Amino acid sequence: GRAVLRPEAIDVIESIYNLIIQAENTKLELVGHTDNVGNSQANYSLSLARAESVKTFLIKKGIPEKRFQK
Image (cartoon, rainbow, N blue to C red; front, side, top):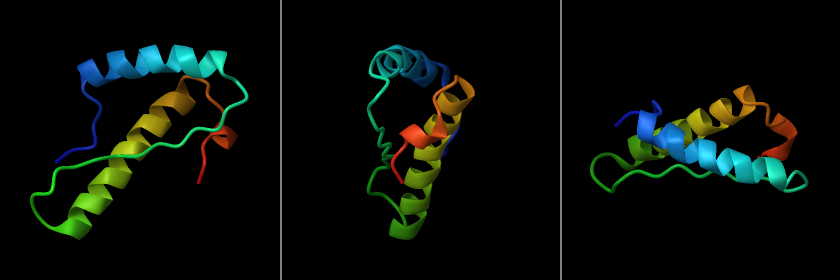
């Protein structure tokens, strides 16, 4: 139940980052996921936090925030 990027996730995001750079005119939509165990509102909040973690990582790598859909 965490939104912290694990090292193996960072490796995958780094690979995707290279594709994002090549497709510079595309908009990006990030979606977080959880399992179906527990409170649905808590899972929804966790899903948003996970997507936000990836977005923050990509912005720090240089992807402009304007590329992300709201």
